Length: 273
Image (cartoon, rainbow, N blue to C red; front, side, top):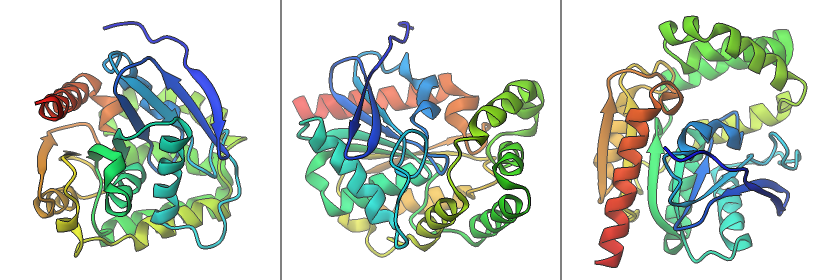
C-alpha cells in the first residue's frame, strides 16, 4: 500500500478538517468519539481518492459548543458544510455508527451531494440494547469522569482477544485523549441524538447506493440493526464480517478496506458508465 502523506489541515465553519490526496472525494465520519484520526487504518487503501477526515463538532479540535437541541440533522448539516466549504459538488460518505447516521440523514435531506454511502455498524432506529449500553457508559462517565469512560470504552468497541493484545496501546490512547475529551453535557447530547434517530419509515426515500458493513460480533449495536437498515434501503448491499467488533475497520482493516474500495470502484464505474 502507498504510504500516508501528511494531510492539509483547515477549519471549515468551526470544524477541524484534514484533507489527504486527490481524486474523487471521500468524506469519512467517525462514531461517538468523533475524531477524524479514527480512520487512519483506511488512509493507505484510499490513496487514489481525496480523503477528508474531520472531528465532529463538540470533539477534538472542532468547536465545542453544540447547543442543547443537538440532533442527527446537525450531524448531517456539518457534513454538508464540509462539502460546500471544499467547493465539492458531491462526495462519497463513509460513516461509522454516529457518522453513519450523519450520512443517512444527509442522504435524506440533500441526496444530490451524496455520491455513495457506506454505513458501518449503523441503524435506522436505535435498538434497546444499544440504549442500555449507553446508559451504562454515561454512568461510568458520571462516576469517574473521562478517564474512567475511556478506560472502559474498549470493552464496547473491540473483541476481548484484540483488547488483550493491544492493552498497552489502548491505555496510552486513553491517557492521551482524556484531557481534551468531550464534556459530559456534549456526550449526553450526542448520545440523545443517536438514541432518538429513527428513519425506519423513510428508508425507501434514500436512493443513494449504499454499502452496509456490520461485524457479527458487535456487542454494542446488534447486527440485526444493520440487516434491517440494508433490507429497507432500495439500493443497498450488506457485508457481515465474522469478527472485529464495533470498531471493525480498526481490528480487521484489510478485510474492511477490501470491501470499501471495491464498492467505491463499482459506484465510480457506474457513474462513468
